[in-house]
Amino acid sequence: MEIALIISAIGLGFASGFHCIGMCGPIALSMGLTKKQATNYYLQNLTYQLGRIFTYAFLGAILGIVGEGFEMAGFQRYLTITVGVLLIIMALFSFGGKDFASKIPFISQFLFKVKLNLGKLLQKSDYRSRFTTGILNGFLPCGMVYMALTASLASGGVWQGALYMTLFGLGTLPFMFTVVLVGNLMSQAFRQKILKFIPIVMIILGGLFIIRGLELGIPYVSPKKAAMKVSPEHDINCTNTDPNHKHNPETCH
Image 1 (cartoon, rainbow, N blue to C red):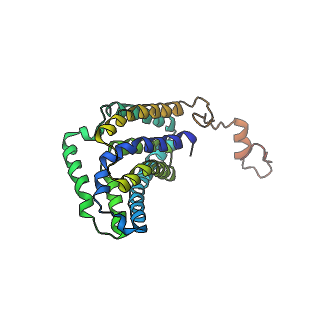
Image 2: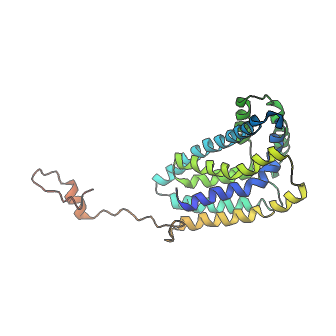
Image 3: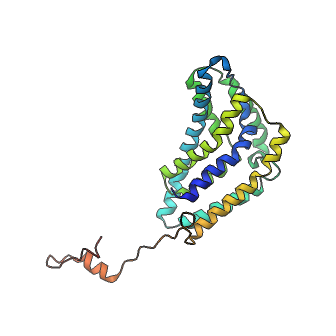
């Protein structure tokens, strides 16, 4: 995977961390983890986080298939530019500290209730329940996840898409893991101040995708993809079926 994609995946995840605390934190806090469980306390928290990341990777793989189709059709660079533009548009709708998905009326209240009650419905203390909670959490609509999935389209393949979303999930891990350990440590006012900077980060990452798609010849960031050119001589040397004709190994690949 290119450096630009790796940076954008981890960057999206890290920038989403504060957002995740506000949006998905209630689920983590309602799981009933207590320090009386000693080692299990940390392992069950990690199991829950891995469930989230598993879902992200699964969704990334699906979007990667779509991206691979664009690449095979020769439209990968245009898809990458489009992804960058979409990221910027979604970022603009996120100004004000709110998830742009939450601005959709018929989703907003539903999301709040589901996220608040999902953990209460899955308070069993076994690891399977923790992992299942994480999986379901990952499927809940979230603007930041939508941004990451949009970006994973430009990864160019199934495994690349899965890896992209895995890196995104790992970027959110420090924040979500910590919120379970220390509870709601940051005040709502402080979180709102931090959230105002997230759209700016999204715009920068969107610009990175646009630069990547333009293929400006910048190593690791916007490399040029050399076109495969076939010369007439190549065709004659390599396609001639005459048994007496000698193929040139330097021109036939």
